[in-house]
Image 1 (cartoon, rainbow over the protein chains, first blue to last red):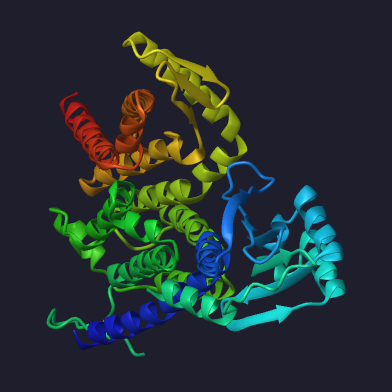
Image 2 (cartoon, rainbow over the protein chains, first blue to last red; image 1 turned 180 degrees about the vertical axis):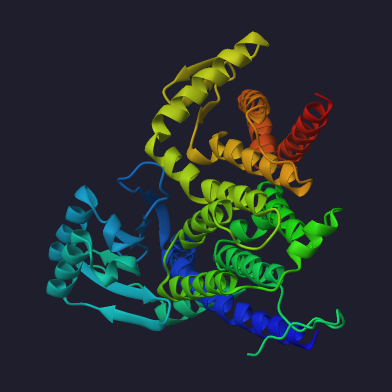
Length: 175
Length: 291
């Protein structure tokens, strides 16, 4: 009876540890795959800063949720666009639009990942390289969350606390 | 660890085979839970308690029942309480190592793949547990439901969806609900236009129903035979009719769509499916017993 007890206690401990690993890894992967709520939170924050959402930017692939939102800015004549997507989804026309906007306007690129804080990238060359790598496949960055914000040259930068956006989303994920 | 047999028949001082196989069962069950609850999307977490996942719970319960309950036969009982051999511990070690390693590496579909191997092992090996073939059947059905069925659906998705829309349109026409099938779209007289996507298809419900049928029979120690095929085909036809009816009433108006697609209608449909699966399983057992 003692032997059976030892067997079940050690088995229970092992099951909890190994299943705990699985829970954590699966959680991390699915958090990386999470697409929609971060975009929605960005949209709400931009609306709070008096940007008027006018339309969603649809994905090229049918039956997928939108990957971005278009805004009319209160500060100038022009359209501000916010893309939230994986690198691998940036295909065809959307990719070209984005690259054109990088050349003609201003942009911010935000990289969101599960295990480290967001980073702000502003180098055009770097963004182009990253997009190419992401589309090519096999890149680690292809699984991470990305946000691009582009706006016309003559417009002011939208004042957003991007750091708090990531924090809010991470808290929401943990619930 | 030293394992001693007690020749006096007093306190047993060894680990019995069924305790080792219960350990395998617990590993697979908890890893399945962890994979499900590890999902960020809340609807997947909630769905654990809903209809389809109730069937998976029944299948695990069946295996637990087979491993723990005592058959009437004394010889069987002694067989079941036999000391675990090296083969039992080896298979336990292989399962524990594979599940832990694959979970750390984040490999998807590892649990169904392992269940397939496990099912094949129980079905073909000489391991010292009673009812091993029934356990093998249930594990194989779980593996089919978790991996092969979704794979088949992905490969033939367009054919399934278009075929199901046309069938739904035809069947609803017979009861006076007129709809027009156009590819994977269904248009009604009310102007509603529904697009059939993977989640609406009955295909996954059919594979789940087969799992429920096998598990429920296994719980009562009824193995499968060729007569079961008639009941499984009957079950699939009933489910297809039910889903066609559900799709038909969704096209009547927007409130109907909301009720049957997102509202309480979904629960009604899930409960009806479980009742149908259980009824068909009981019917198959009683009719075959009589014959």
